[in-house]
Structures are given as structure tokens and as C-alpha cells.
Image 1 (tube, helix red, strand yellow):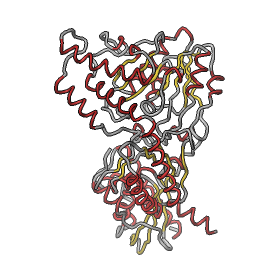
Image 2 (tube, chains in turn yellow, brown; image 1 turned 30 degrees about the horizontal axis):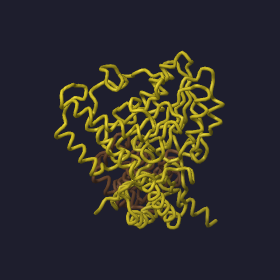
Image 3 (cartoon, chains in turn purple, yellow; image 1 turned 45 degrees about the vertical axis):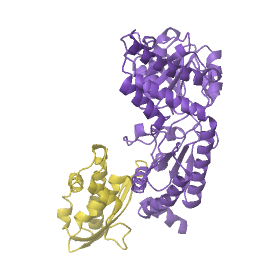
Image 4 (tube, chains in turn green, purple; image 1 turned 60 degrees about the vertical axis):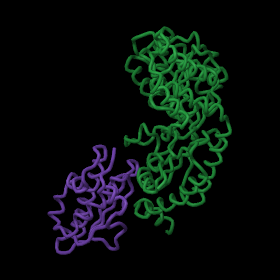
Length: 393
Length: 124
């Protein structure tokens, strides 16, 4: 049975070209890029090529790219490092209720150190209102951190507008672009971002590598201490094979351009139209248009998400309920809660996130299996029974 | 987190599933806000549970424990059925992941509530 992988917002399969680049580095290029002799310099050249690719995508200078161990580390350096470096300005941070935990939890850690954090609300589509950002700014605001697109529902935030507000108030602005880097335009000048996080394994690169863009002149302190690598913001010998793989993955994404996004959008709409036509009592989560092309988050009323996932897995289909980082927790999604979805409904949420390996055939197979799965689970759902009884009264 | 083969078997092929006509006792536990609701129906003859069925909204563990508890109570005297604990249900399923143990509590509570309901109706 062939697998149909529809959880590309959680992670993506490594592309063959990337795997080749990784193998080449692991087999033949072991040098420490900080050393002066030839094998070290070979590694250095490879790594700096990846840095150039990233600078091209972000529209920045190569010196402004810090390679990290992934999105979580980038977010932590950005939030903790920029907040602490701007402590003289005050002790206030503005973020949103729908950030990834890699931003929310550093904010919570800072609250324990005496910082005050504003967690902005979102509308029913998961969208932040830039006016709310402006209204929340105080004389003591040291940092604004707002994600580019949400991992659970895919809503794309008005980052350029928020960037302009932050700039006008001279406040450091970070955006978590883990879900958009390589997919949407992430030109840091257009976005007005001083700090931007990205991750390799969301774009068909290896796990364990990411980057933080740090605009020249941005005040930031390290959270880890060691050698001089990555401008001392991320000390430790660089993950050279990972960085090279990340570079290759980003290069390939950039070469494909918006064509792949357009293809994913078509597939996603085929899936959503098919679900609406074959499964009653479903609701879309996320913005109707300002949304990541591959992301479809749907509530199946009167059933529970995990039971759908387990049943789909029987058909070789991999989907998620909410985000992978929270799937072990029993709490309903904080993102859906912020969008005003009551917990009894959000337990029935399922996220399909499409990627470059998915085809029309995959979508059609899902549409064949899904209605049966939901129907079976509803057949012994006590709340569905109560709902049906209400209908006949 | 991974479920045992037995949990998956009971999830895939739940035993005794569906609504019961004229049950002698009904136990409704759980809460849609928590994402788990279980309804357990029993038929009783001479203080013995002669049939049990269930309907459950919930995760894989909730459905599997519901299925298992209906299997465990059939043919049991009421006082013996009351001794069935959540850990016994979990154990019969080959164990549950720690964060899913609360689902087995649901099964125990539904059983106790169904028996209480039966006794109340009987005026005992």
C-alpha cells in the first residue's frame, strides 16, 4: 500500500537532490569550516555558498544570516536575545495568541523574569489586526514577534504592514517564517523584519538545521556561549552537511518559484470541494484566501480528530490533528481557541498539509476513504445520535 | 506515543457497538469540551449483566476501552462488575500510553454509572 503523506507542515520528505548533497558532504567533506587548511576551507566554501543562497532569497547580506539547529532555536535566539538586548527600552513584548510554542514559551519564560507580554487576539480566520499591534505599543515595548503564516490553519499575516508599524515606532520586529520561507516571498525589506526564523525540514531539507536572519544593527544577545561561530550568536561548530542540504533545498524551492504553490492550491481546493460534497457537517478553519497554498484545516463535527487520523492511517493516509508539536497534549488547539472555535468543536479538527510529492490521484484516494471513515465514527458517536434525534423532532 | 495491537484491534473492530433498545441501565459520562463522551448500556437479568453495548465519541483509546469494558462485563454479576477498575481495562488492552490512562477511567465511570442507573430504576 502506497503512503499518502499529507502532513507537510509537520515535516517534509528530503528531496533526492538534497540527499545527494548531504551524502557528498558526509562522505567527502568533513573539515571544520573554522580551520585554515584546505579541507577546512572546502567546508567553509560549501557553507558560504548556502549562505549566499539564503541571502538571495531573503534579499539581505550574507553576514546577516545565522545558521541554527532549526526553527525552535531561531525563535528562541530572536525572542530571548532581542528582548534582553533591548531591556533598556522597557520590559514589554507584543506577540499573538497563535504563535508556535517556540515563540510562546520563550515569552512565558521572560514573563517569569519580569517581562510583560501582550498576546494579541486574532479574528475568526486567524488573522491579526495591525491596528491592534499599533494600539498595544507602549513606551516600554522592546520587541514585536508575529508569525508570517500559521502552521495549524495556514493564515498568512499582514507582516509588511506590521513591519511598517514596528519601524515607525523603532521597535525590533521578529517574524517566524518557518511555514513560508521558500514558499512565499520573504524579502526582509518588503516584510520590514529585523529578525526572521526559517527551518530546513519544512522545505524538503534535512532536520536539525535552520536560520535566523539578523538585520545589521539589530541589538541581540546570545543565549548560548562558546566559540565565535555564526557571529557568536550561535556558537559551536556548524552543522556543515545540514547547512549545505538546507542550501540545496532552498535553491530548488527558489528555482521552482510560484508554480508549485499554484499547483498545491489547485490540489487543496480539489480536496476541500470534495470533502464538502461528500461529508456533511464540516467547517473550514483559516482564512478563505490569505492562506498557505497547501494547508487545509477542517472540523468534522461529532467526531474526534485522533480517531479520524488512526482510521486514515489504516488507508495509508497520514494527516494531523492540529500541530505535531502539540499532538501528544490533550489540550485543544490554542490556535483554534484564539479563533473562537469552542473546544467541543476543535476536538474534531484535522489538518491536511500538501506537498510536492502529492498528486491529484492522492487527493482522490483521500476523498474515497475519508467519507467512509467519518461515517463509521459518527455511527457510534453519542453526540451525533443526539443531533440526529433533534433533527427528527 | 503508540497504541498496542490490541488497542488498535478494538479501535478498528469495536465490539458491542451501537445503541441498545430498552436498556435496563444507562451510564453517560464524559464531556464534549474534553473531547470524550461515552454511553454504556446494560441489560440485567438475575443480578447478572447479560448484554452490554456502547456509543463513544473520542480518541482511539476511548473507543478501544469502551469496546473492551463491554466485553469484560458480559456475564458478570453486578457486584463483580463493580470491581472492574480502569487499570484492569487498560491491562486487558495490553496497556495504554500514560497520557491516555484517563480514557480508561471513563470506561470505569460509565460502568458504575450504568449499574447505579439500573439499581435506581429497580428501586434498590
